Amino acid sequence: MNRLILAVALFALPLPALAQANAELIAKGRALFNDTAVSGTGQHSCATCHPMNGHTDNKTYVGVEVVADGTTAAGRSTPTLWGAGSRQAMWSWAGTIPAIETNIRGIIVNRMKGAEPSKETLDALAAYVKSLPNPTAQFLNADGMPRDTAPADVKRGFAIFSGKGGCMTCHLPASYDKRDVEDVGSGGPFKVPSLRSVSKTAPYFHDGRFKTLEEAATFMFEFYAKKTSSDAKLSDTERNDLVAFLRAL
Ligand code: HEC
Ligand code: HEC
Image (cartoon, rainbow, N blue to C red; front, side):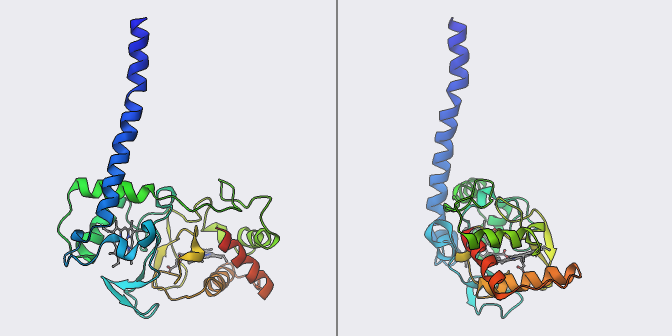
């Protein structure tokens, strides 16, 4: 009997202890995320550009300077970090950084000109960022597919997205991204970004060149049609349906 109790205790105890340690790491990461001491000038925290618990400020940057959207090849639009822990893609717009800790180190040292961060700092920031949830998408199932209760235009939009639009050859559910880069004629290979919360992450593309989802979706549709040598066209109604689906993500 004693042995049974011991076995149960050994299996049961570490779990809450682990959860507790992880909660502490995330809390530490949240504090660091909001701390301007991370930057070289002491003027920027992660939350400066990723406000509202890791979202995007909808701006385009070179370093810590805001630049006009889509005007410079070096400009990078701030991505939302919501849902970061459940994405398939690698990190950064270049889509080539496998470990989030490496990416965060680069942002601190290169973008923010801050001091070399310790492993503990990077681990805490990574744990916090990966803990940020996607907002609830009321018309999506857990697998990313539209629910039966989704409005008709959202369902028609999904049919285009997964059908003649070819979008799902690159933007794979449930996070609607891909662990690979693609050259879609936007200036080189870039990561296939997640489309969750995409209605709130304008401006679009790595350099923020598109202000609206209509523009981004039309560009992508025309790219795919050209790539597949198809003469498929997107009517105004179909484009509105496609955008209705994107807004539901
Ligand atoms: C001056 C604005 C700014 C600050 C400050 C900033 N970021 Fe970012 N962040 C960006 C931009 C712009 C990108 C896209 C850069 C790229 O991919 O080349 C980005 C990308 C990221 C990514 C990659 C997301 C993805 O989907 O690939 C992570 C993670 C991230 N930031 C976390 C942080 C953390 C943690 C901090 C604080 C240490 C921070 N950021 C500070 C603007 C900023
Ligand atoms: C061949 C792969 C591929 C296909 C097919 C594709 N995309 Fe994309 N998509 C990308 C890449 C790569 C980017 C990022 C380009 C950049 O940043 O320059 C992107 C960016 C986007 C963005 C901007 C997201 C953001 O956060 O800036 C939207 C919206 C989008 N795609 C929607 C669609 C839709 C709708 C379709 C179908 C009509 C589609 N895509 C088809 C690869 C693809």
